[in-house]
Amino acid sequence: MKKILIISDGSTGKHFVDRVIQTYTSENIYYVVETKAVEHEEYNPARFKFYEFDPTSLHKLANLLKMDFVQVIILMNDENEAKYTLKNIRSLKNKVRIILLDNWGIENTDPDTVLVNSNEIVASRLIDYLPNVPVIAQNVGIGEGEIMEVLVPFGSSFVYRHIGVIEQKDWRIVAIYRNRKLIMPSRRRMIQPNDLLLLVGQPSVLKSVYRAIKRELGQFPEPFGSNIYLYIDMDIICKDTIKELVRRSIFIHQKFNHNLIIRVINPNDIDTLQYIKEQADLNVIVDIKYDNIPFDISFFDDIQNYHVGLVIVSKETFKHTKTRNMLYESHVPVLKMANKSFSSVKDAALILSDNRDLEKISTTIYDISEQMGFNIDLYDYQNEHEAYKEQVIEHYYNLSTIFSKNIKVLKENENPIKILSQKDDFIHILPFTFKLTKKRLYSLFSTDSEKLYFKLDDYHQIFIPVQL
Image (cartoon, rainbow, N blue to C red; front, side):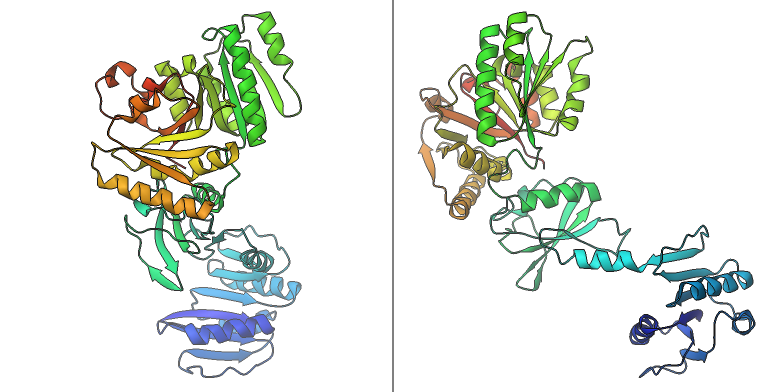
């Protein structure tokens, strides 16, 4: 039988003792000291012993502390009385674990004394009632945000997505609450508006997941980042192409209404550099790298320091396998610019394949299309019959209802890549997966439309990471 001492004074102490009476375990016996006796209902006399005296009196407290207690809990209204009571107990029992309700910000260096800050508890509980703030489990696990519940809004990027296609790295959806009923998640379970998701994972990862769930249209390049980053290697791109690349990037930056960072490496033409510098203003930052340090070392620092959410490169730059790997590892969307007008693009073209990666990036595609004014065309190659395709098409139709944006599903008997290569005024959007980092030579005889992305190299393309 474990003995626990409770020193209670005031309404908070009374409420605590009443809760203990309701929830006590038969393995504990409680000794309750009150400065003024109060009535408690329906307690078991065999488990609760009540005393009435001043706990600041060392003599009176010493008689009770002749027993061995595993824990002491102090809830008192007066700061000085709480400190004296704590001091008295420590003079008699220097190793017993003490829990003290701290209303004043008392300093503590004793490892066996735990101060529970009442102001923090109240503030934390009230924050849970604020809209658009994640509810974090306070008394489960380590209480640092590794358990979180999130309400899925109607226009969320997670609505009508199957759980199996949501990339869950370092986090998991462990439960769904729908209409006040618990639903256990499965790979084929589809998330619906107003579902309450219970998430478990690394606190820092869950913060990003929360932002992704709450994200609605009109926020791209969030949640990947907040700024647009144009990467120019003057050893690879000719000066005329650079000027066109800068002009098109400024057009895109104005459409998305986010800052544009122009990063130049290997500067070698004064006139071109002057032209780039002239574009700088409050929302356009020009950063020229003059040192000889390999750029891949500073690239990831740029992604973090500038909070980059979209990287723009030329098709010549994206052609390099090493650069493509670097871009893939950044986990940021990449817009590969071709030598075509961007302002004339009308359609976003998606080619369905034998996986569901397009479902993973669907809301980002809708967001880009909404902000840029693109139509969405899904190309379904009829010679391939995969069940995954029908689920992806169903998902896109569901999203078109939510976002009030029409889509076209084009069922083709001919390879969509061949059809698109005869078309104009479109941008090709596809998932940025690891298989795209391989050398193009290895994909020449592949039947995977994603591996053959370079067949549409003369058109603008956006590569979107499948991870959050």
